Image 1: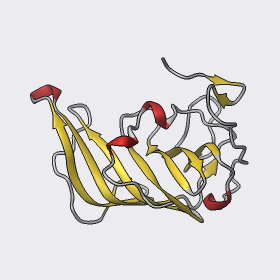
Image 2 (image 1 turned 180 degrees about the horizontal axis):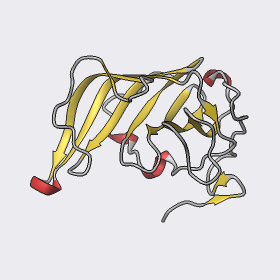
Image 3 (image 1 turned 135 degrees about the horizontal axis):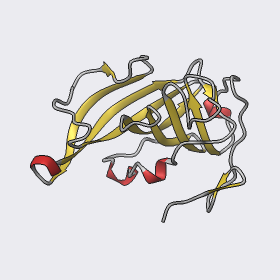
Length: 175
């Protein structure tokens, strides 16, 4: 069953953290809660603009996804917060609708804007074949810089818990 937003809070979760749009914050000092930060200001009618990070912060741990609103292009991230940067690991699902024909081992920029750097990619597991093939890919190093992003007053996009299965990651970063 999908969770619903109730009064600015995702039902069944901790309180929604309040952040002011256009006011960059130090990730490490944010209160624990749910957030959405995007590279462009909050649009009037859409879920987000530019490229966005939807995340839950708990202590220094950040878990969420980074991607383009209204698309299948996103990367699940888990890491630690330091100023305007998240350092950790990434997980992506390659499927016929959004295939990764090759998995880079070296460092590369995932997004057009150049905020997310991934490295040490490898296949965790695969299932199915042909048009139903699914491949879980882990990147042992992920670094996301959020300098210049806008903190939306409340998350508008789907929560990471609906898109990312962090239990798939081989090792968890130290807190």
